Image (spheres, rainbow, N blue to C red):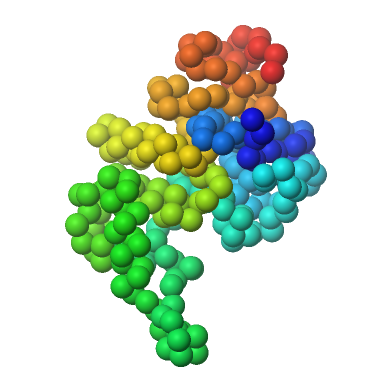
Length: 254
């Protein structure tokens, strides 16, 4: 099986600080790839490069076997790479529907949409309701309620639904359960499983080891700006992963 997303020898420096140094990553179709590492290991920079928020100094990104170059997250989104950010990147004062289609609104057909830029609100509401229902977010009954009235778990669900609605190739999740309670975290993990069941591969960045070991098919261990190793969560314990991250134990050869 060929990987759907490949990062080859990515490097990025901020002055004298090396954020990435010849970093590699492979994501295969239909898998959840966990990405773990200590603070300052370069995980965030790696993900920002993959989603177009940061331009690497050198290296190559391949999507479906073709080299791609991103100068902004919009370009990555255009090619089917969506990101669920740690802060969710939602506008609290807008409705669920407005947040789902922010920046890619559906216009009405004909003269009203083409020239007067009128939006097709019903089409957007129907599509938003459909996407939320597919992910089992039935607790959200009013698709036009403001995001600020939702619970943390429901907001996370909206962010995930938005990403999976438009992320046709890859969904990247950055610390999706960091600010959630036990019940809401459980629902997000279920959402990850449901997204994977639809055939969309996921990159999951998290400090929560139990969550990563529960849902990941493979775990990418990042250390000192580069990939240290990739492990099978069924063959290693969480204590092993922590030891690899911190350098207390020699990592297996990738």
